[in-house]
Image (tube, rainbow, N blue to C red; front, side, top):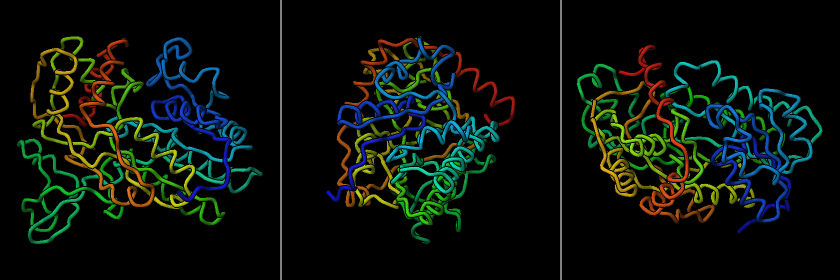
Length: 384
């Protein structure tokens, strides 16, 4: 492995979140000095995070913790001054919510990144590398194969088709049938949600500015990350949490579209391993990488595996409903990260689900936030 110079002081923005807290604990166990900057958003941590949030409690008194937002320039500057690496996770993350909280998503995701770059350009600091959490959302609908036009990248699906129950993507040239391919890093970037647009913008801002000041950047395009510790109250991210809550409360699960839509579910420990590789290995510098399993799993498969692991019978309604901004399919091509960083996901979905369910069984569930989110989106014409 081509390791970078010794860099032991790490700032994680959003470090009290799901991925950030797990990364912080791993880094601490390996002798790193970790500072966390996090605003402890109530959507993720509840209204009393100091007592309610298991994510915050897992790192409390173990890291240097700064409660504040990346949108506050002075707070961000003070947190970053003596750090070797900034791992920039702080972001609003709900695809559906981003379609009606547009300014909020731009302010936090783009504005927070702009603050980071202003700090790196204008202030005296010791930052030697930046890691940014990007997303598979930047690809929009993923990569497909058309028998006539070969590799194609379909645009967002039309409401008129979706309302008629026609959920699959079509060739953008001939409107014919296409078959799903793994999405590689050189695929077309054309996000279909405001969240995806902010992630694309973050990447581009960091690569352009940091190149000019000779600070390496690594962007990780995470797929659907899951595992013990993910928020069980945030209605905009993590269908595993939402479905588990509904199953354990014996509620009916509304399966959107026809249940055959698929995602690449990657276990939290695999994501942390990949991220640490980006910190310590110079072969990652100035590159963007997919992080996933390379295996698509349908929503119906998710429900069935969860129900089996929980030992309950699922009450399922396949409704044909859909949310604007959602994609049909996407799964990662891992050749690049496997070749450059020797990344190989180690946790199969069934194994990861067992670990998630074991942890989730000790937590408190609340389905009301999810129901409220759908009511809000329906009122605004974004859920049909």
